[in-house]
Every structure is written in structure tokens, then in C-alpha cells.
Length: 333
Image 1 (cartoon, rainbow, N blue to C red):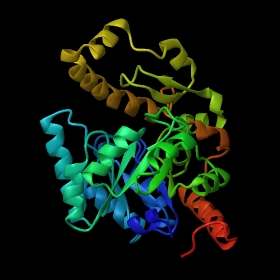
Image 2 (image 1 turned 135 degrees about the horizontal axis):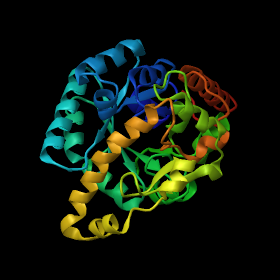
Image 3 (image 1 turned 90 degrees about the vertical axis):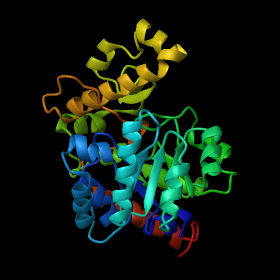
Image 4 (image 1 turned 90 degrees about the horizontal axis):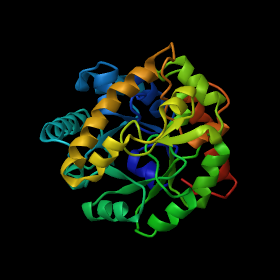
């Protein structure tokens, strides 16, 4: 066992990471059903896939067949309304029996307080030491180290450097970024990570409810096809290089850049870009016509060669994990 398997109540130290707009109930449940843990992303569940939050959580739990699922809490204080909504979602998740939470952005102390009160665990996304220290101060139970190979909003460090930076805080550390096959999974856990979180690999699955052109683009792409663009949210997002991305460019315009740099307008501009990105990514990720190709993905595309079942992926990684354990090169139960 690893700290992650104990904290999440799972067999395989593998997280199907929360993804906007890709985290639908069928995908989240499939990862959990197979022995890892899938993470509910509330905005995906409600805004993209059209569920009342409680209804969506219950459906996901039912599909998971009694296996645990987790929840992602984006806790950046963009507005009081959003904070109240996130608090409500967390309370509902706790009422429905979810006990594993992944927090992103902001200071997670208030989430930790709520979750620890009922015996749950909180892991916090970090990209460097200062955010890891804030998580430690808040009482989180583990860290998810997002490296420069990740999809979505990547960090700046490679997996080795990031583990060196945050691995000495006495908390479990999960690798996020660059893992698309069993060999990479075993390499990261052998390096000292307590588990792995994957996103891109789970987009190219039969259970994921995004467009077929998006999935096909992941299968066809190489690591060199991944670029960072600021045009979606104002900060770098890892996407597949497509004709649309090349035509649009990867930097925000001069007006937006000035507004992002000027303190009185920075917060408002960032909030506007994030709200705009919710609509953009929902539309482009679900559009079967692929007219605008803003497709998030990490450098793990290099090792993704086909669309398959999420359950099959977790089971295959599980066999590799058990083989490593039985060979005496990994932790034992």
C-alpha cells in the first residue's frame, strides 16, 4: 500500500484527474470501479453534462458500484457567489459519502476543516514549493505535484525537480503530468511518488463524453505537438497544436496583457477570461465538426496510441503495479 491507496481507499495508486469539460459520470465511475479513483469536477458535472450536482454525484456513485469517488474543489476566491456555491457542493459531496477531495488554487484551510470533521482526506494541487507550504499550513493530507508535462494548467518544473522541491515536507506526493503508459507509471512510483494522476490518457477513452475528433487528435499527437497558450485563461494552458491554435496565436493581446498586469484590473480581467474559457472549452471539446480546435492535452500524448476503455487502462496499470510489488521492487500490502 501507499499513503494514496490508504487515504483514498483504493487498490491502485492511480487518480483519474478532474478535467473541465471532460469529467462525466461514466468516466469518473469507470476509473473507480476498476480500482483507482475518479474525481468529480463540479462545473463539468453541472454546466457541461447538465446534472443537478447531488443527482450527478448519486449517479456517479451508483455507476462506481460501491467503490469510492473523489471531488475536485477549485477554491480560488473569484467571487462570494462562487465561494458559496463551492461550499454547497462540498457539503453535498460529504452528505453523499465522498471522503477524498482534491483542491486547486487558493488556500484550502476551510476545505480541510470541513472534510477532516467527518474523517475525510484532502490532497492539494501544487506546482512549486511555496504552494506546497501553503497546503501544509492548511493541514492537507497530501500533494498532487503538477509538472510541466501536464495538460490543462501545467507547472514549470519537470517531475524529478518538482519531487525534489516538495518531497521533503512529510506529505505524500502524487505525480501529475507526463504519464500515459504503464512504464511511465512504474517509473514515477519508482522515483518516489506515492501515486500518479492522469488526465490526457483518460480523455482518449470510450467513456469520456468529448468529441471523436478530440480523442483522435490525442492519439495522433506527439509530445512536440503540445504547446502552451495564454489565450484561453490568461495563463498558460497546454493544448494540441492545431491550425486553429496556430492561426489564433498563443499570447494574449496587448490590451488584455496590460489589464492582467495592472493590479486594479488584474482580478476582474482574469475572472472574465476564466468565464469566457468555460464556454470556449465546452463548445470546442464537444463539437464533432471540429471547426475550432482548442483541445487540452499534456505531453503524455506521446505514449497514447489508441482509444480504449478507462476500466481497461486502470486494470492494465494495476497489473503492472502488482507485478512490480511481487517482484520486490515496490511496496507490499
